[in-house]
Length: 88
Image (cartoon, rainbow, N blue to C red; front, side, top):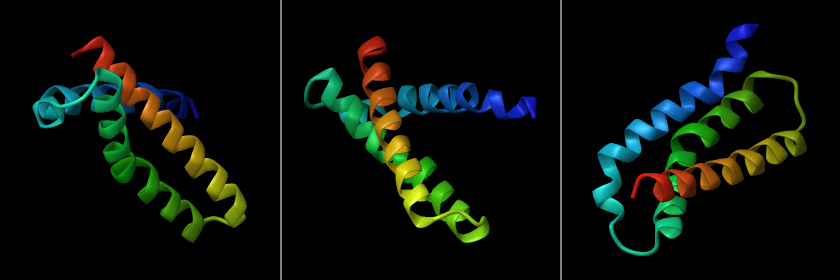
């Protein structure tokens, strides 16, 4: 159960590493806009596959999965913006 609480830190380290590798690809725009584009891309790799697996393998409602997906999208966009602001 304690491993559940490590998830945000693991995702944070992965996003930080990935941002360091791909930030030249997001060279145009303000730091917040660059970070949000990175967050949207990260959402495609983290949030959407996870929500697909959740919906297809657990007995949860579609509305709940939509709420979790929206929450994940918002958090990835914010994470991307923070990464871009703190590591331009």
